[in-house]
Structures are given as structure tokens and as C-alpha cells.
Length: 119
Image (cartoon, rainbow, N blue to C red; front, side, top):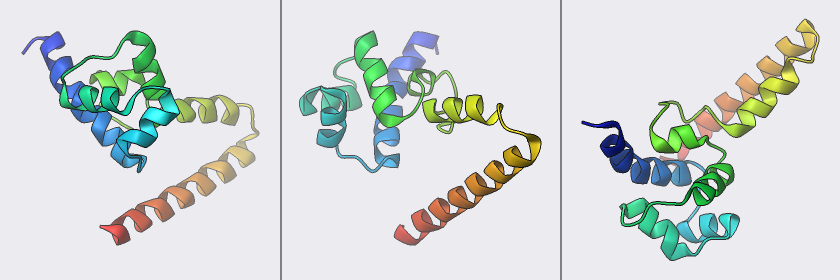
């Protein structure tokens, strides 16, 4: 399978998965991006492909990278906010970094537990 074919097939699924992960409807995602709800629907069904600007808007609204949406990376956790956190955490002393990592791990465990209960 060629790279462009893989991207064409994976983008709609990744977009929908990221939207559902963030617990957004298509309309809510559209409002966050300034797009029409029908455009989000077309992107998720593969009927249309977003422009570069719209791809960036979608990624920003979903707090994922464009690489994730395009299938270039596997981890949805490679988020734009994670990049910001990494940049800030590097400025902390070692003891403060450890505290921040513990806090973030606890918050992630809480979110995971909540997600399991809602299934």
C-alpha cells in the first residue's frame, strides 16, 4: 500500500477517533475550528480532504498533532499540549520535575479509571 493511499484511508478514522476521545460532537468540533459541521462530516467519511489550514485547525482543536491525524505517528498521546508541557518541565529543578510527573501520572490514572467506568 502506498503512503498516500494509507494516509487517505487513515485520516478519516483518526479524525473521528480523536474527536470521540475529546468527547466532542461533529458540531462542537466544527464550532471550535470555524468549519461547517458538514465539512467535519465529509472529512470523517473520506468524502473530502482538508486543506493544510483546516488540518491544522482540526489538530489544534483536538490537541493532537497533524502527524497523528495523517497516520505518521501511532500515539494519540503525541499532543500539542504535551509538547508545551515538555518545554516547561525542562525548566524545573529535578525534584520539581519528579513532583510534576507524579501529579500528571495520578491525573492520567484518574481519567483512565473514569473512562473505564463510563464504558
